[in-house]
Length: 169
Image (cartoon, rainbow, N blue to C red; front, side, top):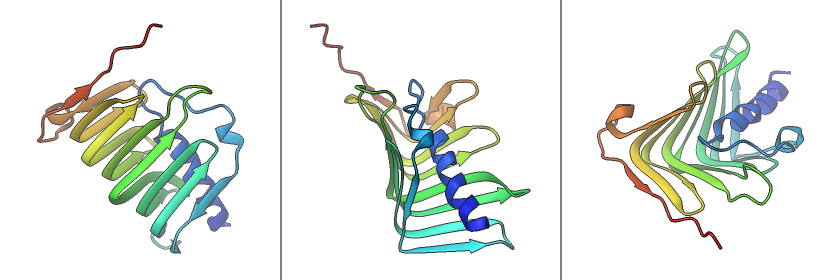
């Protein structure tokens, strides 16, 4: 039972994880089946964690996550944190039909379910339609719809933002 809950919950978390500041998931994503591939899975009921290791790929609808390792921690039988690590860990999602992909990557992606805060660290990048936001640390608070990077996010590197002009034709 915990295995099926972990698999289902892990992607429900991922659905929240990949929502970038101006993006929402395709409505059909939440109804799509969750597919998880990894070299190994370890469900530890004593420590309330589920760990997927080795070329981890998680997909639901347009949402995709790739990492070397994904750990989901539970508190009171509910998911509390999803941590994806890799060289890099990455995600992508189509926010709406006919809209460009939103992608993100970092050596570590942490999603705190209770606070709805997403943190990308280690060469963190968020990109949509060739526009990008880069820093060593990017924090997105979904509740407050607030994005911080660099020193504002307790990082140590400067922020680099590239915005391309909109084609008006």
